[in-house]
Structures are given as structure tokens and as C-alpha cells.
Length: 217
Image 1 (tube, one colour):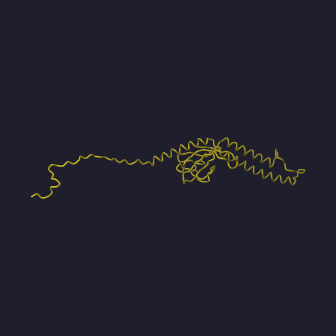
Image 2 (cartoon, rainbow, N blue to C red; image 1 turned 90 degrees about the horizontal axis):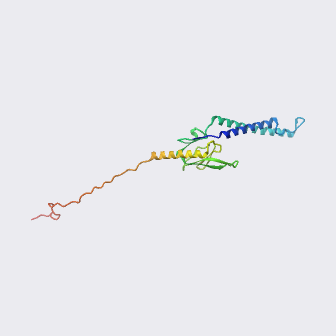
Image 3 (cartoon, rainbow, N blue to C red; image 1 turned 180 degrees about the horizontal axis):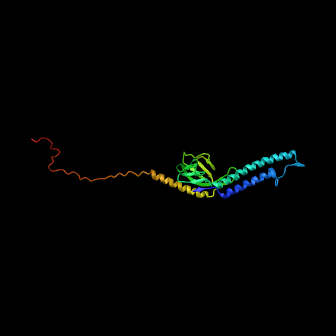
């Protein structure tokens, strides 16, 4: 199973980037909507020059942000790189690169949940991966935060439900564990014990008595 970022949300981010670029052009040059700097007969006053410098700074920041949003959205829409891949080997974060592979053997449990964003306080869906005791995960993965032996993979803008991804991952993990258990299974050694009844010995009539060992005169 593969999970991609939502095309609709990427489109919205791209539109926001275009709006920021347009607003920056208005602030720095056009002043179609924004207030023009103070001037006296076409000559900027001291206050007007300060306003112009502030407009250039704000406009430049908005242009950079808008270009990043628009460029990133267009790139994601064209490349369509998966954010998470559930495979036979494990979970890959950020596509097919082995650098982001979390192998099933190092995973204890997989589930889904929500977490509060520390920046804006919003509730974001998360794919939660718990490692085995003493295990470790790959550091510095995009969209991933760590807490002790637990990884939280941000799933707020996936086109696939995080619950469906968690269920697919749980099924693949269970299959891997069954294969490992069957491979390592050793049948117990069976020991057969046989008992044969032996008849009790019968004394022969010709046999000498136990007391007749002496010499007879």
C-alpha cells in the first residue's frame, strides 16, 4: 500500500503561494490595494521612505514564501512521490529509498491516532510506530517526530485514510511475524518407550539346592 499527499490540498497550497506573490507585488510596486507611502508632491517624506523599506522587506518575505509554496506544490503534483509505502520488508518513509526503511523485525506494534500540533494547536492524524525493546529508528525523517521508542508520522494531508494504512501495516507485520515463527519452529523430539513383560523364572527340578554345595561322604 502507498499513501500520497492529497492533490486537493497541494492545489490549495499552490493557490496560496500565487496569492502571496500577487500581494507582494502590490505591496512593493503597484499599491493597488495597499496604502502608498507618504509623499509630498511625489517626493517621499522621511516617514514615506521608512514605509517603503518596510514594504520591500515584507514583500520580499512574501515572495519567498509564495514561491516555496507554489513550487513545492507543483513538484509534488508532478512527481507524485509516496509519503509512506507498506511493503513486505517494512515501512518506507518518504518513498522507495532504503534510507527511510523501518524493518518489520524492529517493530513491536503499529496503530493510528491524533496529536496536538505544538505550533498552532491543531489536531493532526498520526501513524504511530512502536519499536521493540532496545530497538532504534532512522533519525531525521521528513514529517516524523520521535518520542522515546515511538515514531509519529504526520498523516494530516494524506489522500488515504491513516486508519487504512495502519490496518494494512498491521496485516503485513503479523504476516512477517508468522513467517519468522514458522521458520524458527523446531518440532519436539519424540521418544518411544516400550515395555516387554518377562515371565518369572521357574526353578528346575534337576537343579541342586542352594545348601548342597558341601561335600557328601
